[in-house]
Image (cartoon, rainbow, N blue to C red):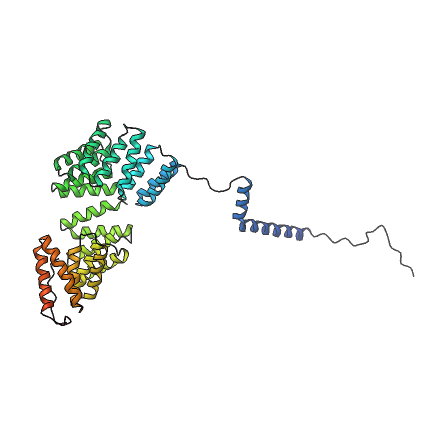
Length: 403
C-alpha cells in the first residue's frame, strides 16, 4: 500500500499558539532586565557619564572652597578650614577676602608669622584696605608684640572706623600693654557699632577681667560662645574664669561640654584634673590627668600634675615616670619643679645615686631662682639621703612637697 503525502500542508507541524504563556515569558524577561539594570546602576551611570563627556569631578572653585572653609570654622575645624583657604589663595592669590580669611585662621592656629606675610600681601594689593591693617595688628598682638600692633590698628581705623576686627584687636593690645582704660574704651566703641561679633565680645571680656569686672566678663564670654559655639578657646577662658571665682562646678560643666565637642581634647582633661583636685576629688583628678597624658604625652604641665598626684598617693614609680616625662618635654617652665621631685621619687624607689644627683642639680637652680620653699624641700631631701645609707628603707617618710 502506498502512502500519499498531502503537499499542501507544511512538512513540519506548526506548534500551537499559547498567548498567555508568551505574555508571561515577556513579563519575566522584562523583570530580569530591570533587575540587571538596577544591579549595574553605577556602571551604567558611569558609562553614560563617559559617553556624555562627564569624566572626573571638576575642581571646586575658590569661592566654593571658601564657603566650605566657613562651614568648617563654624564647626570648630580650624586646620581643615585653613587647608581649604590655602588652596583658594593658591588659585587666586590676588583675592583679598581669601588672604584675610586664611590669615585669621593661621592666627587661631598659632601661626602668626605666616599671617603677617599675608597681611603684607593684602597691603601690596590695596594699601587702603582695612583688612590688611586688622590682620597685621592681630598677628602682632597674638605674636606677643602688642605695642607694635596699636599704631597699626589705629591707622586702620582712620580708614574705616566701623571695621569691628580693628576694635577687637585694639582692645586686646591695649590690655596686653597694661593700658586697661584704653582697652575698655576700644571694646566699648566696637560694641556700640555691633554686639554680634564673637571676637569683639571675647576681647572686651579680656579687658573687663583686667579691671576686675568678672561678672560682666562672664556675660560677654557667654555671648561670644553663643555667636561661635564650636570655638573652644572661648570655652576654656570662661571655665578658667569660673575656677578663679570658685564657681568650680560651672567650670567642670564647661570642660565636660568641651569633651562632648572634642572627646580627645587633652587640655580639657588636664583642666578637669585640676578642677577635681581643687575640690578634693583626688581619684577623679588622677583619672583625668592619666587620660590627658594618654592623649598627649608631650605636655609637660600634664606630666607635672600627674606626677604630683602619684606622689601624693605614694606611688613613687608612677611619679618618677611622670616627672621624667615632664623634663623630657619641658621648655624650661617646669625644669626646677620636675627635677627635684624626680630626685625625691628616685630616692623613694631606692635609687640613692640618681636621686642625690638630681637634688644637687636642683639645689643650684633653686638658689639661682630665690625660691626659698623649694630650696628647703631640696635640703630636706638631701638630708634624708645622707641619714639613710641604704636608701631603700620603706619606713622613711616622704619629704613634704609644696605644690
